[in-house]
Length: 338
Image (cartoon, rainbow, N blue to C red; front, side, top):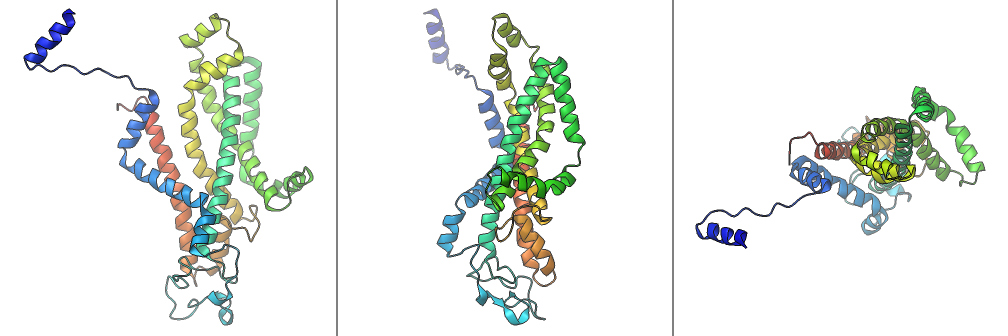
């Protein structure tokens, strides 16, 4: 009662009454930091737009009256080597072949709409990247937690396995084993053609990607397992599974999330490189790498055919990287911001 009288007296005298201090969770603090970063918010908006375009690609193409597989012989010049109308001529412009009907132009030789193919290619690239990242995070987190907490022989075996995987030249292994492992997947029941190739890409990216995350998680676990709440759980008789996934794992979500956001653009670029080299998805299914590989032959005649897919691919990768960097800054406890 005395406190209430004192508070009323100070209010009557015009003194400021301190407001109630509300506690904030780590996620709320991180979101506040992220939201104040203008670059991060712009990148997040662009990222949401790109994800929406990939998710609703069939709806968008239907509304525009486009199809990624339909041939448009009227949009190309058969007398001029099958290039889009207006291209390959002495007076052709940098953006030749673009029209209201085909805003990004058409594919030489077939006349397929480039905008529709890029939307579907973005859809496939994001599916491969998200699937591979999910498996990478699951494997890296599981092996990293087990290795860091149990230690001893288990840590040594997992550590040598990670060293073995990291010692392989990843790109060369993926190129060399593409045909053999794709046929093995088809023999195991995976549908032939692109389903088997997409499955192969997801598996190899995950297998060669998880050791990097496992090492990060292992280092974090070595520190977390010595803290008081873990010792208290052990003293209370908690089992190993509970300690790993109820006590330690919730304290690792920040580095895991940061690694996931930075791995996604890497896998998108890797898929494009593999498709460029002919290891990825088979035509006529569109991907960024396949479109870029085909556009190189027409670089001097149709510059926009190379520029537009290249800029879009760079935009996707840079946007993911900017969001990943901003997430890392927002979750850094030593950032000195509140």
